[in-house]
Amino acid sequence: MIGPVQIELPAGGSVDLFLLRFSKDGTLLSPQTAAMAVERARRATDVYVFSHGWNNVFADAKNEYTDFIRGYVAQREEFGIVVPDDYRPVLIGIIWPATWFVTAAEEGPVIAATTGSEGMAADTVEAMLAGIGDSLPARNRTALSELLDGVDLLDEEGARRAAALVSVLWEDHDESSMAPPDLNQILMAWAALDGNVEPYEDDGVSGTIDEDAPDSDVDRYVIAGEGFDPRTILRLASVWKIKSRAGVVGRRGVGKLLANLLKGDARAHLIGHSYGARVLLSAIARTQLRRPVHSLLLLQPAVNRWCFAPTVLETGREGGYANVPERVERPIMLTFSEHDFPLHEVFHLFVRGDNLGEFNAAAIGDTDTYGALGGYGPLGVAFTEEDARSAGETYELDGEIVAVDGGVVVDGENAIGGHGDVNKPITWWLLHTLTER
Image 1: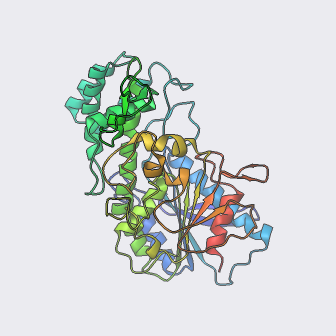
Image 2: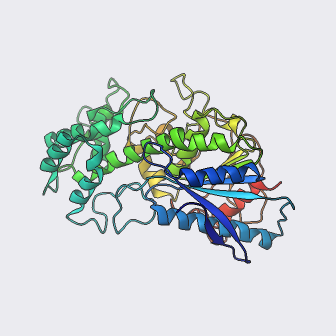
Image 3: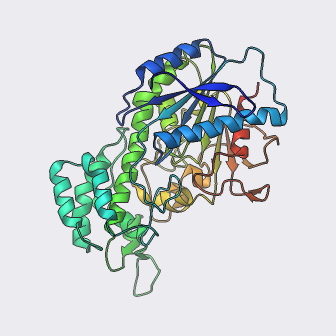
C-alpha cells in the first residue's frame, strides 16, 4: 500500500506508521511512502526508526513494531510521562529481506539449528537448498544439489567440495576490508557447530596443544566425528549472507533515508534488534550525515563486541563502527544477555575473516575476541555497565555507551530471556530513558 498504516493506541486514538521496504541490494521499494514520511518529518519534533532482525517477514515486522509502539506509548500514562504540547512524532519501520530459512521448531530469529534439533525433517536439506539457490551460480547450485541430495552425512572430501561450492557467498560482503574465510576455516566452523572437534593432541596426551603450532583454531583443534551434517553448511552460508545483506541495506538504502530525515530539525531515535542493529549501525557509520542522530537503542545486537573499539587488539585497526558514538548525541544503549543462545553460544562459531570489529570474524570458542555484542557486551572501548531494571527505575547515562545486562532477574524473570525477548516493559523503558526531554 502507499502511505502509512494506522496503529490503534491502548488509551484511544491512533498514530501513523510508515513501513518502508528495501531490497537485498538496498534499493528503496516504497519511494512514494518514503517521500510522505520524509515530508512529514520536516514538520515533526521526533522521528523514530525501527529495524527488525533475522527471519522476520513483513507481517512479523509490522506486528513487532506495532507492539513496541503501543507498549512505549502506554508507559507514558503508567508513569505520568508528559510530552510537550508541540510534540509531533513520525514513526518509520524498516522492512528488509532478512528471511532465509525457518523450521517449525524455531522460535523467533534463531541464528542456528544444530544437529538433531526437533522439527528438522528429512527433507530439510532440499528446502534449504531452494532457499540459497538463487544466490549461487547455476553450476554451483547444480553441483551442490547433486552432492547433497539424499545424503545424511558427508565425509571430509565431500564436505570440502560442498564448502567450496558455497564459499562464493562469503565473497558477497559490504566492506572492502573484509576477507572471506578459507576452506579450512569453513570446515572447522562446520565441524564445531556439529560438535565434532577435539583439542589437538601433543605427544599422545589428549587435550594439550603443540606450543609450536600457529595460534589458529584450525591448528589448535582437529576434526572428529563420523561426518558433516549438510544442513550445517547451508546454515553457515545463510548466516553470512544475511549478515552481509544487513550491512548493504544499511549503507546503500537506510543511510540515504537517514540523511534525508536529518535535513530537518526533528530528533531522530533509532531502534534496532539483532541484525537490524547492524542495518542501523552501517547506515550511521557509512553515510555522510548533516548532524548526529539523537539516540540509538540496540536490542541484542548481532555484531562483534569490538565493533566500537578505537583499536582492535593487536591489529592497529579501529572497529567497524568506531565512529558511531560520535554521531549519536545521547549515550548509545544496548542490551546483552547470557540467555541469548544464538549470540552467547553460537555467534562466534559461524563466520570467519581477518577484520576484527566487524561481524565477519569467528573462532572456535574464543568469545573474548569473536563474541557477539548482544551475547557478552562491548570490549575495547569505555562503557558503563548497568543491570537491567524494572520499568520506571532510573539508569545512569554516563559516557558514550551504556551496556545493559539483560541476564539478570527482574520482576521474577530473566530481563532478556532469549534472542527475541526484546519487546517488553524493560525495553520500552530504555527508549523512554533515551527520549525524555
